[in-house]
Image (tube, rainbow, N blue to C red; front, side, top):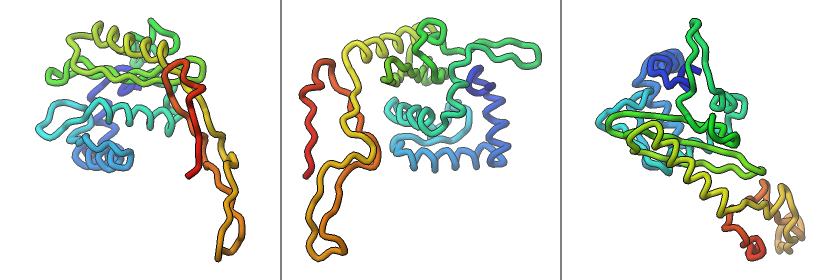
Length: 209
């Protein structure tokens, strides 16, 4: 909570030392995980995000990381929506102002350095549709919240999400020659979900090639 809610650099370093023995080793773990997630334009050199010569990321990669955080760690994700953290009798507010302004927002993380400006990766859930916004380089806490709200409002207003195929849904049976069996069932292992401009649902087509 010191990391997630209060953006504590000391908490980040403590976690890094506990898990990997030091920040350098922890940065190596972070880079391995980033590679697994497909974050192709990110390189970590420390656990805090403080400026370093070869420490960088992109808005796209931060969105990838946010999606993985939400989907892969559902037990921990509710912490990102907590508005306050009290430790040693000191009550500290979450730096994400959207948690007070929009009930659909439930995360995710703020950041600030002189080089990067004020940044916010935000996520909101409305009617089973989740959006992630990434804002970087703004000039203050208020502007990063306002710009994030604009993006989320735009996304929910002009787009909608539909599940077009269900898990293990049978799409087709195809004949095999020279196989162990003569027929093979074709389908998808996981649900197929697409986000399209509003009013375009009728134009979604599925076909098997």
